[in-house]
Image 1 (spheres, rainbow, N blue to C red):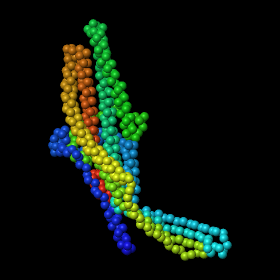
Image 2: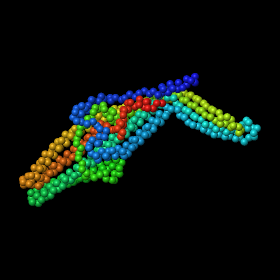
Image 3: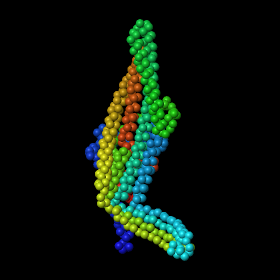
Image 4: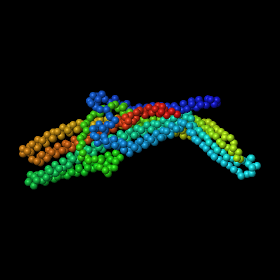
Length: 494
């Protein structure tokens, strides 16, 4: 072959090796609806009703500065997030390792040798003493004729994309769990105060029943029932205290803090955030919003690309090796002029018989790709289900809270009437205490409902993907995994 044609041939071979078949984006096998069934209308209707889009810092929309500060602190100090970041570093290092296979390997080699026979000078003419100094370059290169190395590199890039989505998923999980534990802690503290007031009122009722029993106006049955209700209320206090302590401990772990240290005073003023509607968008938008779906799509792309790598094993492999350098030679104390040396070798390796090993590898990788596709399909359906469940729970709990709020308002008015009737002597203190307990019971039920509404809101934000962005304002995953291959090819030319 003409030496002038060798660079052109190598360039053509390399250009052919730089092409991998694009990964086709997966499509849900179950068509997605245009709107969520429990969203109370389309997106336009939600926007018209004052619904808000999901903000990147959705936890700050609750209007609680303590919650916002704790979530920010957890995102900076949580160990799960830090571990996810390290997995991204490892994946990117794997990408660099795979990309390096497309380039020649160049090694510097040097050697020093010396031999002395100890023979007489006349004999040394046939077996001379020698000293050799060598310094050269050793170059080896596997030309990726079938694109297998390129496919392996793109698969590693997809793994890195999946790991990056894992960071977003970890941040979303930490933020939602901090918000959930925070509201559980606040709700338990509020309920503890209400139950304590109920227990005090019930103890006072039991005391009055005891007085009436001594006067013959109440039976022992009435007294035992009043005392049992007071005991039952006091029995609710320890579980609520446990819930307060456990939620604080979990918050500390989420924020990377010492659980043995108290975070803050649970008696600090707290007002439940006002309920607000969030526009969920369309189900298809979850494919670009949910980090778990992005990670699953990137995993599918990686397994598909590894299938291309497995099929490339059927094609020939071309190896180029070259050695060049210079040596300084001395024979019998006679210095010879420095001499250059070099060699070039081109080897071709093609499979002929391997007892089905290559085909088995192809089939195994094809099965893994199909399994990852089924995992993505299931993840899409689960994502839609979680949003539908959250929307339904939020709507039902809002109706329940409205009904409980109305009931509390009626009982508060009855409490005011009972106080006036007591002053006028038309009822006794025992009747007033019964009305007071009904008011406290309504307050407790409403507190539980308000807590559930906030938990449902947190779950909805999580189900929608949270709208996460990086600190510099750029989207963490700017493009879905389906555009991965072209992006990698543009940023990492061979």
